Image 1 (spheres, rainbow, N blue to C red):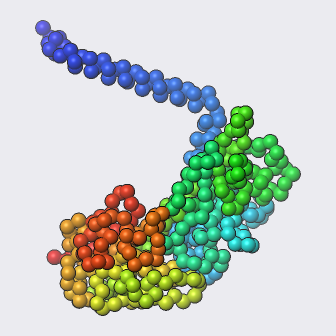
Image 2 (image 1 turned 120 degrees about the horizontal axis):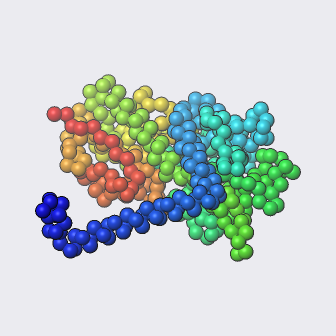
Image 3 (image 1 turned 90 degrees about the vertical axis):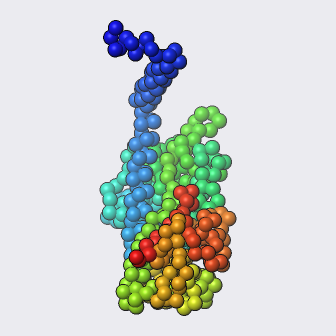
Length: 410
């Protein structure tokens, strides 16, 4: 008897049944995949939507990268990190087409226009119908000429986006948008794009169920959507940039800036600077205008766990870091005898010389500025640091805190 026949004869009945079920499952999966592929191939509209959504995602990443890469506020026309470009409100096809307009709006609030693809340093991105993307920006993330409050972890978005049904909020409280990018699609009945100035949003973007994508402040609605008779009432495809997404990328740069400054300070003085007290002068004070000098949240020789001191780090950081009050939104702790801090600090049981935590954007239940660490951090293992507990944990994947630390010297 062959080996194959012996194995087959020796298999229990339940194993043969499991093999048959597995085979059946593979057949179903293969059939479903073929069916879905076939349906998509037979429905060009699905293919066009998918292509547009992929290009919208590309535009979103380019917008975030542009914002985070920008630098100092040395000149009024050069936005600080986190600021977003004004929309392109120029006539399409003009010499300035594709460039951000000089002013986001004349009356404050938000502004809408085409995506300024030339200012972003990229090719003109279009939807599947050949239309250039449109773009709206929240007042809270405009350049310092128009919005003078700082951009840091405490910044919030203001734009709301609804699902296609017009009633389900896709941006829950605490997840408001810093910007929104819209693909207008082909014109719907009533949209005569030849009769309107080609920078008029209402000729391209739709309104439905009390939502208006052509309104700079929204509220916005996802397409496609149909009315009760099955007629398409909005075919705009949209993608939003939440404040949380933008700040998460921005915090990486701010943390790098802080760590470089701490290293330079330690090389100069032989120890790390003492933190600023959580309740220190200016440490919970709002900054009204980033273009003016900012009174610093200052280091205190008796503090070992608090906020990142802005005064002693001033020679080592870029002015955007100080002007946008990044020090006072970062949690900072040290274990350094040279600074009079001898209590060990740990992260998940490992001893560190210092820890630095950027708190991410505020969740709905968090109110900032605050003297309570729970208004900044989510992990219960970290929220008692200002009460004297020097044992910290790596932030959980379900929150948006970012932790950096230097291992203790041997």
